Length: 249
Image 1: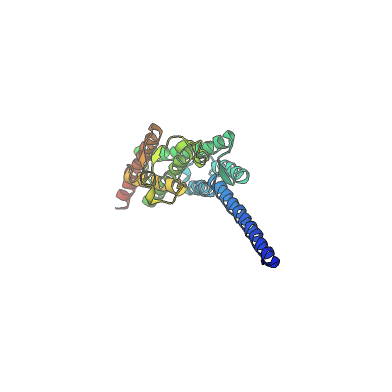
Image 2 (image 1 turned 90 degrees about the horizontal axis):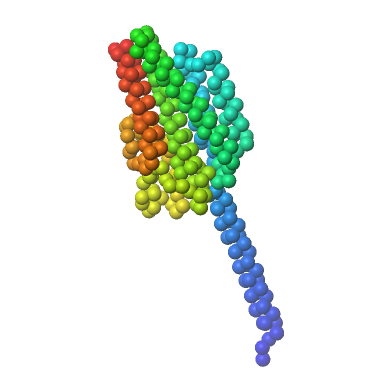
């Protein structure tokens, strides 16, 4: 004869097991939802830090290579950067078009500033201007390093329509750059996407080798940007640094 107490214990165990399974499924669903949310946003602080570094580098340039008062452009650019930092701490797949236009405008403003500084320096040297060798090396290093930062920002902002579109699997455009991890997924974790540091590395190698290294440009936009960056880097190193070395020797 079956013991009633045993049946109650069995039912209690089954109910407890069902409740534990339900809790586990809810926990797994919450973790999956959190991971999905994390994949749909990207920290913006590395790009913000890079822009801030470019602004600080601008303050190191000599007065002859700056436009207007030394503080004017960094103050304007810093105000825009502060506004972007406060309003959007992350790049999200649902970011507004206006927000992205402002971000591109900020990068373009700093890029124009650096291009003018390089043009002024080249004009100064070609016209027979006399300058201290150490000052030339410092100016060339500042312009070159700013060039690396700015083109890293351009690649990061424009590849596949920007970081917002890259984060959304259903809205990704065609890639402008082919990273090694894209050709061989076994080299990376599942769901890998290029981050800001990857684009900075592409910019650095292009500025030093004057050509692509491990990451290949696929579109005309990417090829044009990399070509222009290599040209700027070549002018900076070939004109400024070589002149400075001759003066110091």
